[in-house]
Length: 212
Image (tube, rainbow, N blue to C red; front, side, top):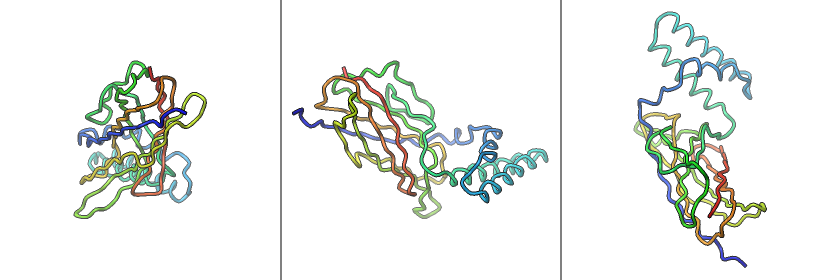
């Protein structure tokens, strides 16, 4: 029998630069309001907010339009059914800012080499720790699956990601670092699951690696 693998986690989170919070254009913010949502009342509310943004822009009220657009994205975000991921990448090193990642040129990982993964979750909830603060947080689970579909390692609650801020960030990014020990060379899928601390939402993503 193969020895049980040892999975060493390291995780970190760097708060996004405030200058990146409103990266998305107003036109991109308006699109979700036209999409079908689980409840018609929510869809109608979003459509009304989108019309309000357009009206304020037409009136030259840029500040009001941006505030209404924030309200629109907040309500769209709260109407989602689960966690999704705008981006997940195998990267060369931990990422300092949202979107500032350098993907690896290949997925070949040397035995005992740290594995850096970057993730941009979406649809998470916000906690209220007090004093006007917002909290974002996730429990992280890891499963390692070989090319035959067999689970060779599984670690619930391998690490956590947390942020407390005065802003309800929609552009949260997490750095995950895994080191796999005791696993032979071959193809593996790293199945990472994030469980939202502030809602019942759960989301997973796969990362394919080749241990060499």
